[in-house]
Image (cartoon, one colour):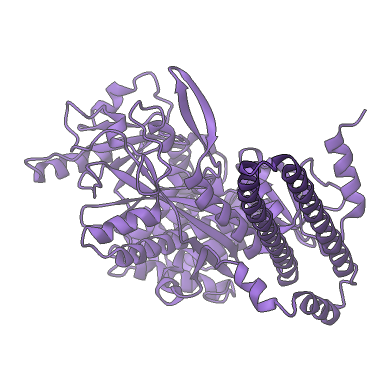
Length: 629
């Protein structure tokens, strides 16, 4: 026998209107609670078990694009390959390359090394840095590749301790970074921001930032790392998933108190300390913009290799990213990492008795994450679908307002009548009055429920009338929608609060960001030269073809040197990341090849100038337009 949930899904498959917005939540998992609140708010049609035959407008996955193999169209909330692009190693690589090209613009990310591949370089640079510092020697934070929730992170004073600390994990890859010790404190506690960014599309590039976010605090007052406190995780790390285990973790419903607070409350505290929070926020926006410009080429390559098939139309993508940002003592923002699947859970753990915890709704998480998901859904819908959702939302808000008004009227009336009852009871006429009042209140409540039922029925009739309009009757659709809103259209519009999302690109930062498109042009060269088996990467024959078409033989590159370069890059990147080893060149390895060739064939004063000359030469020979999206 089928379950009621499955029967409901089968019924909805047959009766969904053409204008309804459908969403597949079969892979939403921990995101399901917040998504379902948005389903109710926006009047979406949810398919909790999926909808294979007709597909959905939106597919909501918890972790990655590959979670759901039933995607046939619509919009998916994950870009293919984004989880790899946002990994500690790949993100560090992208930002290191941009810092080499634009040293003054990309100084917001700590110096990074990949271990064990760059262990010798790590030791040499650490020795140089420590020789310059007499009082406080540099501390380094080591994070496992692919790690999350603060697991496996540790601090080092001496690079040589890396090998002795993890002798049994020689096959494990790590990322070592300079630990930022001069941080901005509030009430002596270290904290970082979780900033939410919505990457709406790649072509054309568009992304938005959420105006509200979270601040995660450590649970032990902060002191600079020393040999005595270097192992104090609750002092040096701000990860919520780690600090929630601390006995000092503070749950508070006040937004400016506790171990988790709203971003806006911290910004107000910064203003109270005599600083300029607006300048801090603008600097954070610039960090977000520059980081997106650094990772977008990698994402484009991943999408191209995974999805695009000639003659077939696949889904489009969007994604919510979580930026972890730390403030230095001078309020300069430092990017710690980018999370491709930031937690959208609205629950938090609270200890109800020693050793016993329970999950309770977190008001601060709900305040931030519900508007974030709701406005993200509205952002990615087509204009007609968005109008339909906003119409449903207005109706719901108006209905709730009427219901609250009626309830207040009944409660007010009942309260005054209770006073009368008390007075008449004192006069000895309590029995008749109580009977009369009970009857009147019951009658009012019946009228209220009848009014609610009529309201719901009217709404359903109006929705049915609206949804039966043919899809090509845009003019009639707008006319009917306008009739439904009048004469209180302006009042209904006022019910909808301003979106929590602010666009960063194209406006207002396009002019500042367009100078950073050079890696995007290299990515286009790579995608153009992949050949038939795109998902495998660039083969040796494809690499030779690229060199031949660009006529680098005339610039002094021989066939033998090209083959040697290819094998050398292949081995280097296999050692750099054993999990992604193969017999082809990844985009990162191809980028290294571009740097090597540009240095040989187009010597110049800076790496940026050499690379620009190289890319321009290749584009002219491959008939690719410069800066074409």
